[in-house]
Length: 85
Image (tube, rainbow, N blue to C red):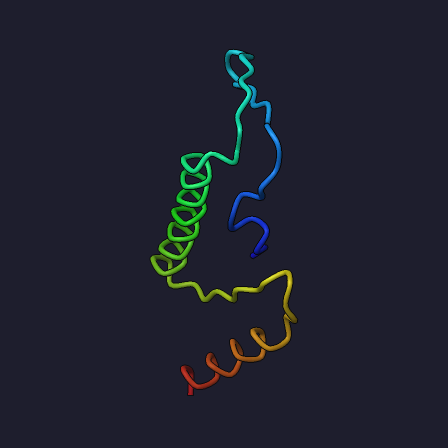
């Protein structure tokens, strides 16, 4: 997971294009509604992924791109080892 994808960055106006109609619209992403909607979509996506992995009974390791990967990976294997003893 990339922390930069968790929250929409505070940038200038965006031009969004509707892929079906080709209509373009200028969107100021600093609007609270835009940021709130984006953050909610990210949260909903993460929850759906967690639910899917749980439903199919698949283990998951979460890595952060801004952190060392070895600690979560080692913790994952230690936990698996405990569960399957």
